[in-house]
Amino acid sequence: MDWASHFSGTFHLSHKQYSELLCLQASLMEESMEEAQKREEMLRMYHASKEALSIIGEVSVNTHSTPLPPPVNDDWLKVSTSAGSGGSANG
Figure 1: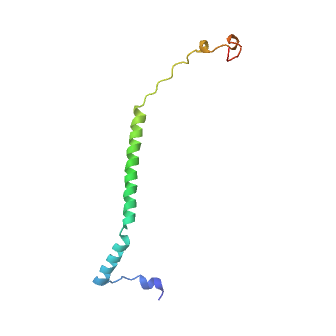
Figure 2: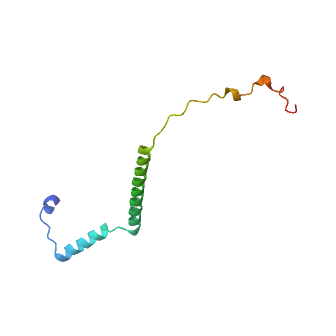
Figure 3: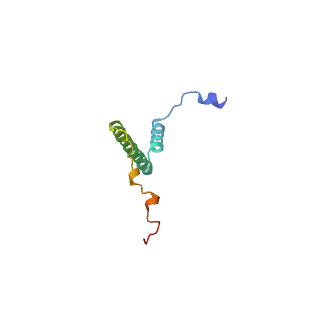
């Protein structure tokens, strides 16, 4: 008899074996304190990111831009180099 046909039948567990199997399964699935803290931190980050994206979306939708006015002609402010005092600072 090969191993596949050996295990193809129905397993019969006693009540004690079944209880032990459930306890083993529960202990394997139990979350450690560190894992629980990590999960909680990930959930906090998720909710904070979701809220931030919502706020960014609201700001983006409610932001209206207006075109800039044309540039001002400020040529009259520029001092011509020929009208100076000859470049001497002591004058």
